[in-house]
Image (cartoon, rainbow, N blue to C red; front, side, top):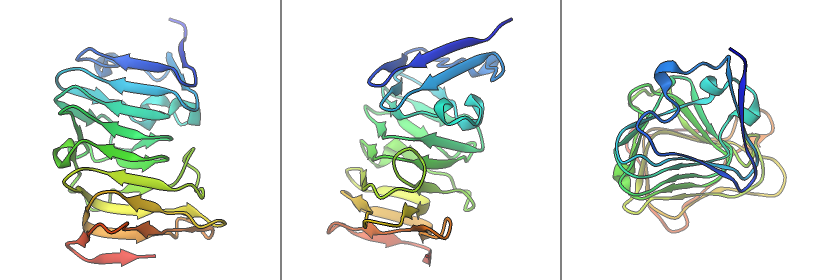
Length: 212
């Protein structure tokens, strides 16, 4: 059947406006190749429920992982695979859309900023072995500063911050944050560390388990 390739260039955007999105019912990682360049954006914008493909659906090559990911419109944007959603740039949730981690419980890896329209915009997993990981631009631990913005406050089951050694950097809170299980600061490997900058916002750990 051949191999179909779609290249989304830097500053380009691929917008999925239909209910099927990438049509996960017929998805094949063998005959479909998507290359998301640095600075590109994929947006799921249907006014209703959509499935959001994760890293294993795009193979393991870094260019098959999202750079910027926008979830807009309305309805649940369900993370499709139970492995990992990797966003090398910014994650943005707008409109009344909800990113749903709870059904398949993938880990989430963020290389840029976390922007959510409100607390109802993220339905976190209850699986205490899964995390939202802030690493830095391009998904390798870096010294870049990342931010969390969610009017009304964001809730994570597990939150982990892994930053590179070198010039101090952090994840900076522009909204209140609640962690219901574990906050982990650093220790991804011998060269990673974590700084969470509260930026005068409250941090609540409801089942206090913190490591670093």
